[in-house]
Image (cartoon, rainbow, N blue to C red):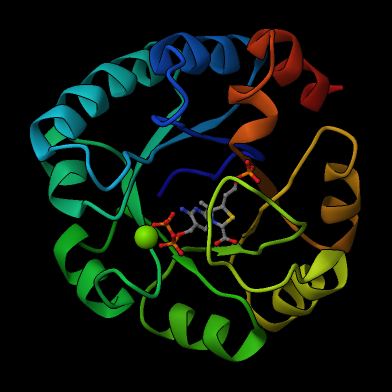
Length: 202
Ligand SMILES: Cc1ncc(COP(=O)(O)OP(=O)(O)O)c(N)n1
Ligand SMILES: Cc1nc(C(=O)O)sc1CCOP(=O)(O)O
Ligand SMILES: [Mg+2]
């Protein structure tokens, strides 16, 4: 299994932005992982086409490409793995589908669910919301760096902190024990996504 990088871009297919241009900017700036996260209304065909194009961009720069929720698309496109949460396939089922070598992320918001997800086959955990976010509705309250750190201390796999992450607050999450941060709005919603992505590298 490949080493998981420390900066993950999650695509934003909502904003009317050019998703591919944002991905290109983030990769050029040095982001290590792209998670393709099509909105629920996006058809499988559209999601597949988007994944194939983003995967090609990742392959060119030897970066990792994951697919959120839709594991059949991850498999069909030949992506490096996928990510599942509470409303998706159970982690053990996702592992069976992706096979033993794929990267499999699972959302975990506390140490107990984190331990279970790892026992079921997760190779990394998405932990959040670290800070308040408007990108996704219906999330629980932010758990802060301390909540992220509590999960990191409970499991031996990399923790990817998500939710309200900016270039300014990312350091707090790494210090708390996160291996990586995952970002939507701070890059996709920026006037200049390349400059915004570069700020994370600093
Ligand atoms: C790295 C990372 N962490 C958490 C999530 C959220 O996954 P999930 O809870 O399944 O919610 P959706 O993203 O599917 O709306 C994630 N995608 N990535
Ligand atoms: C998709 C998602 N999942 C979260 C979770 O906590 O599970 S937070 C989130 C959205 C993150 O977007 P932004 O970087 O713009 O805050
Ligand atoms: Mg999901």
